Image 1 (spheres, rainbow, N blue to C red):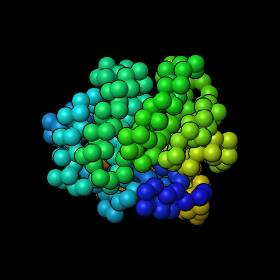
Image 2: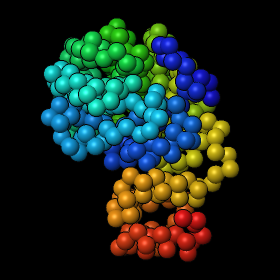
Image 3: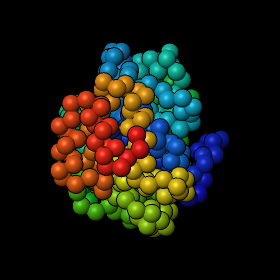
Image 4: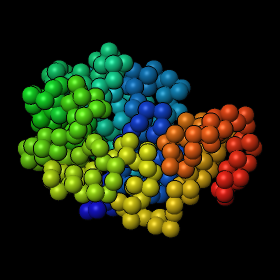
Length: 314
């Protein structure tokens, strides 16, 4: 993978880890950073909740050691005031190196709050928010969106142009439309068109599940970098394969390392319980009966004993 330059920063490669609600916590971000990803996104952070100093939201912002310039805080919201208060709140706790504004989430709950894909059809509001955040934040700023509402419009391209005009340092484009959600195929030609029209780096996102998918995205679209989401969560070794790191690891090693990172943050009492939701993602490791056993475990000792029985070194 090639190196990515954004402003005066030369990143070690052009691979980014996408956010996924409920999963992009510090333990997973740590193992993905160790796997070689150059930029790792937090879960989407509500500007309204952060502006109100919501404790749960603030905990999502816990900064991992030596996390810069790797960590990017992804924000969503509709109120300029809440964005500015959020930036102030973050600066009081730690100065974020990167902020991304999500203007492409298709989830109904986000749309109802007039955020995410809402901005595809309300681009004057999008412009005002990007401009306000750019004025208030001196670090690296990016915007993430989709190709459009449907296949026949160019709303994603227009939003990309606005993002560049208002000072975004790079633009992330998911190659589906709002109407597609997460179904159907990614349009590499749609991503290519945006790459051809922008001067700032464009990061391609969507359906990157193998090294071959990554190479195809880069060669066809001409994008400067890749953001990998569900492909990495379903195969945590993918980032490592793309970056050429941890070659001695296998999927079991990743599983154990992930669990140990969970123990560090959540402790013996809670780590195994929280980690259960990851079992389906490691589908190559366990059969249906084994998955059910893990879900029925009552404490970390039962959980770890089962792992040892299966040959894991915990």
